[in-house]
Length: 193
Image (cartoon, rainbow, N blue to C red):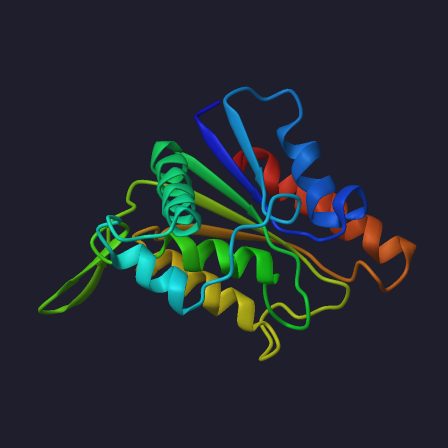
């Protein structure tokens, strides 16, 4: 297996459907790094953090230096991965806050993207990204699926354009549809990881 980075973002821990599906898919695999953004949340982007991420670091407090160091570590982890598997449950029609905070901390001009005369260019290239999204209802290909467009946009903005989505829907619509959708997601995920 290639070097794979798994990003978990569910707040439900062991009860999380997305975590369970990912764990089953990577079981027995080697070269897997797991970053659980709910268990170890990254800081929320605010004015101080945004300013720190753009600074040279000389005039920063120890707390802000630590945040910049974490951002650097997250970016290096991402750059070193050949594959990225993102567990993205749908919360209120969007990705979890924990996953959004991750993207806010790694989206850095001159580091993960740059501005050019023709627009921004992503600098995180040559990654296969698989997004595993779990939902209680059925939202794929409807206007309610705003997280698909957001994830495709932010990943593309950072340079990751080889993105595939795996859906596990109807997970709160009865035992039979939930089991069928989990099995279908695992089947689709198996050749990708």
